[in-house]
Image (cartoon, rainbow, N blue to C red):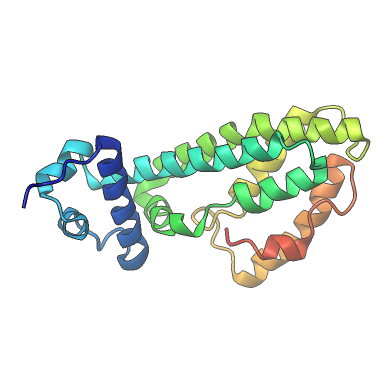
Amino acid sequence: MPRIAKDPQERRNEILDAAIELFNTKGYEHTSVSDIVKKVGVAQGTFYYYFRSKEEIVNAAHERSLSSRMDFVKNVMEDSTLTAVEKLRKVLLQGFPAPETDQGILEYLHSESNSVLHQKWLVAKITAFIPYVTEIVRQGIEEGVFHLNTPEEVTEFLLVGISFLFDRGIFDWTDEEITKKFYALETIIDRLLGGENIISASALLGVKK
C-alpha cells in the first residue's frame, strides 16, 4: 500500500498533538520519543525531522497554545457587543489561565531544573496579554465603569500579580490558601480598576490555574 504523504505542518501538528496527549496521561518524564512516534505511527527519524528533542516539543506546544489563546483574546477585544467588564471576565477566566491540555507542559515547566524556562514563558504570556487587556481597561474608562489614570501600568500589575501569585510552580500554596487568595483577589481587582464586582471569587475559583 503506497504511503500517503502529508502536509509538513499537518504532520508536525500530529506529532505535537500526540506528544501533548502522552505528557498529560503519562507525565512528561515518563514519555519517550519512542512513545510519541509509536502513537503517531511514524519512524523515529520523522520526529527528528520536525523536532530536535522532546524538550523542543514543550516550546512548540507552549507557543501554539499561547497563539491560540491570543486569537481568542483578540476576538473578545474586538467584539463590539461586549462591555469592558464582560470582555475582562472572558479574558481573565477563559483566555489567561492555562487550559487543561497544557497540564503536561506545566509539569515540565514546574520542575526546579526548568525554572529559567518557566519564568521566560510567564513573561512571554504576560507581555502578549498586556496590550489587549490594556485596551479593554481603556474601554472601561470610556464607559465610566473603571476609574484610573494609568491603564497600562495597572494592567501590568494585575497580570503579573495573578500570574506569579497563583502559579503552583512558584508558590506551594495549599488549596485552602488558594481559595482565600481568590476571595481577596475579587476585592483587589475592584480596587485596582476602580470598579465594582468586576470578577467574582466564585467564578475565579472555577478556573483551574
